[in-house]
Image (cartoon, rainbow, N blue to C red; front, side, top):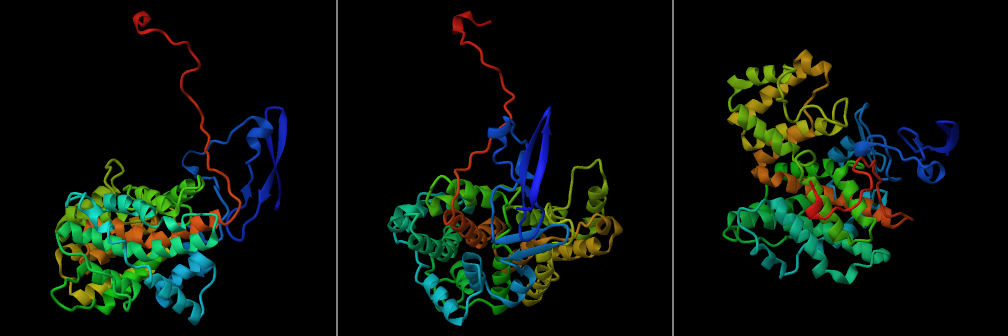
Length: 428
């Protein structure tokens, strides 16, 4: 505790505790405000409200900082791998060689899904959005793995976490295979996490293939960069659902549903759609003019960030990765990527964008990269959900492992006051 804050309401003064974290702004504890004063705080969208205490991820948007358990995101993305980052987020420390091997083996033991889950897919239309399928199938996992649903049991929580991390790539790849009418490919436990996912996505029983190592590394980085992002909408949804005592599969399904919203998880798909709308490099100037026109509602997707008022630290790594992938697949000259590269050049050189810090963000580069790898746009948010699962599980486990309260936000009621019921015959 850092001290006290004094709140004056009319003729009364109330002292509130000021709390200090490791990094970031101090917080005023208002949890007793209603009981002590009869007043609520009003904060639509929770823009100035810390809903929990957490040791997992820290963001400083003004400085362009993102830390997982204290480690800078760029160092992890360039020097680590996704499975190691999963261990870090879940356990708080980086693993040693033995711990990493055991953790990787534990994930591999859970990559397959119950055979009856295949039957679930037959109930969906072939053209169903993959996120709709993900919400349903992941939520249904509790019906197949109900042997570890005691959330008060640390061993049950650990096994459920492994199952979610391990099975998410399998389910995601099944969503894609079902949509294109190809047979499901079983996981290959001798492959790395990202390599196995690409194999399940694009391999067929007809021939022996192995994903390109450059594309594997790029996807692994995308997973790392999207693994967690503090108390965003989907993570807060997982915590909110978890506070009711719901099982982790249900909580993660709720997180997937929240991520599906275009204002949250659909940004990279929106950026790619924008590039398609522009259509040709020659049309870029008119779209730049529209973006600069204050009277035009059009805005360039994938530029700037709601949280990062400086450069998105994930975009620095993703930019390099994006260019590596474009070079590997020979896509630099493809029309859509030529548009993307020209927009990138303008945003990094034009004073309008520089002054407003409208730099290309991670969604801009990840959308281009995923497209170049061959992943269709309607799978982009599924990839996001796959990567973010570890963040959701880590936050859920952190909350359940500590004393917590049922989340119950209050409201400022502005509806009708109490009034008597009037029979329909007497209404005017």
